[in-house]
Structure formats: C-alpha cells, structure tokens
Image (tube, rainbow, N blue to C red; front, side, top):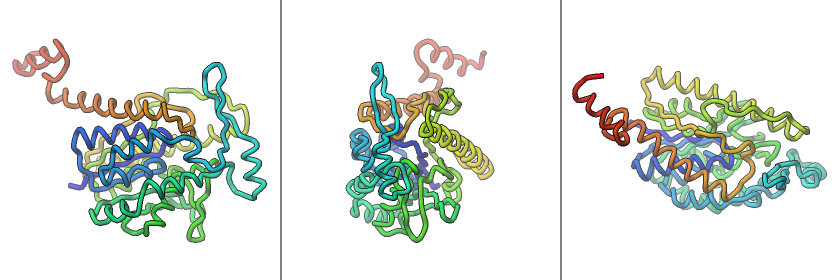
Length: 322
C-alpha cells in the first residue's frame, strides 16, 4: 500500500488545506508515503512529510502581502467596510520601467521559503525516504514538470517550490536551466494522475475550490480584473479536467480516491493574504474534514448518528425492517 496526499493550488486558500491535513494526520493518524503539491500545495508538502503540522499552521496564519511580494501589484482599500482589490499603478509602472516581465515581484516569498524550508528539513526528508514532489509549468518547453526532492539539490528544490507558486504575470517568473517557469497550476492544478503514475494505491486529494460553481462573476471593470477573470476561467477548467482524468485513472486501477473540496467560496482573489481570514480558513478546513469523516462513519455505524435518528437507524439495521 502506498498512500498519497495531493494538495491543489489556491494561494491563500492553502490555509484551508492545512486544516484538512491537520485532521487527517493528527486526528486520524494517517501516514503518507507520497506528498504531491501544486502552487500553494508545493509550499506545504515538505512540512507535512515531516509531520510538522503545527509549524505549518504558524507559517500559514502569519503571512501577509509583505511576506509574499517584494513589489506588490495590488492595492487593497476598504469601501463601506469591504475590502476592494485594485491595481497599484505605481508599483506596476516601476516594474515595467525596470524592464521586468511581470506586474509584480515575489522575491520575499523566495526568501521565506529558504527560511522556513531549511536544509536540515531537506536532508531529513531524504533520509526518511519520503517522496515529496512539486509541480511547475515550463513555459519554454510548453510542458508540465514534476520535481521530486530526491532528484534535486536543496537550492534547486527551493527554486522549484518558488516557481510552482509564482502566479505570473502578478508574481515573479523563474528563469532556470535556460527555461522560464511559472505556477504549476497552469497545467496541473490538482495532480492526482501523477500520484497514480508514481504508484499510489490510496489518495487523499485536497481541492481548494467548491465542487460546483457557486458564484457568477461581476463584469470586469479594467484590463487587470479582466485578466484575473480569464485566468480563473482557465484554471477552473484545468482543475475539472485534472479531476476527471484522476477519477478515471483511479477507477481503472482500483485506487481509493478521497476528494476534499472547500464547502463554500473562500475568496475571489487568492493572492490577497489576510492573517485573520487564513486563521479562520484553517479552522474551517479542520472542521470540514472532521464532519466529512463523521458522515462517512455514520454510513457504517448508524449508532454514531445524532439522537433519535441514530437510534432508529440502529434499530432498523438490527431488525432488518424499513
């Protein structure tokens, strides 16, 4: 048996995935052999491979815009008590003036990765023979690449994690090995099939979107918001394609596949990092996984259902009456 934990991309919504992972690993005591992540998922897999859930929670509930962006292309203002995200024209113009290829720069994230995913962690993962893999999009070669920690030096692995998280053109473009790399989610937002190809026989996949579309977007008001809407549209369809292919592959090979979606829309801009919201999402992820587990248990144990409903179901199961 080879168990895999797969975490999709989703920016700040990664806090929800952390809560789900905490329940599965701490409460359910699940042990995984393979950890595979895309974008924000790639940030999480090293900590999870070492069981460092508390450290990961501390990281994900204490980041903000400055932690991620060295040049933030967004401006967040409050209108009638609500946060509204618009383009920061000055910062964007500064990037263009300096001949950079993107609206913003995420060099602070690269520094954060090196501080929080240490060389000691890298060596321990390799010593434990844990399989940790991150997804990147090779824009030059027009292909998706999966970078395993076992094949990388420490510096290279940190680079691949950073590249996997870089949602261009709003974040930095990774230029490495004569190629340009960007967010792995552009081609493989939830790499279930890759986990199967690597021998997984049971997969828990955390998907940082709702199972069905719950919102209609407001009309775009400027090129910046239009670009966001176009990307969200494309990534939504990439995700659905990844899940469909993953389900088919799992069904054909008799692999147990557990999907964990967000029950509600967490945010419409996952590049905004709000400590208060991310703490709330972490807790929501934990509670969601707990509820899903209890529902699953009740299917096999009617006596676990609440109050009279459970008593009646248990009585029926014993007598065989409907």
